[in-house]
Image (cartoon, rainbow, N blue to C red; front, top):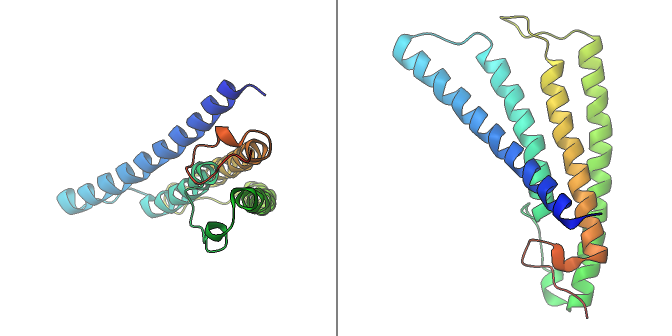
Length: 169
């Protein structure tokens, strides 16, 4: 697989996640501004806000999973040599890949049931399944990025962007 293509894909996922941070912040800012200035509440602001936060969480998982920016406990990792550090990294990434893949599978079921049950927002009666589908796409992106990270950890550890991965000679 072409490295430049993978890097562009990774960067695109991170930009999408950053875009959702901006959308959530804008939603909160406009909601507070309208409520405090004009005593007006956006219809379904709460429902839309919580669903946007869900989307942000799943796209955030995608962004942090590849870079290794999630919370880790490196007590054992820090006290072993580079060969074992790489083995620990590969094992941990494989476990993460499995967990997020199962999570993606179950989240798809939530998208499907939300669509089939025609779940709507309270005020404007908007269907909620598109929000769940966008969150699911973020989770799917996380699976792809973790798979890329696993591939790179095994075959090209020098291509990993976080500082803790070292090449084994």
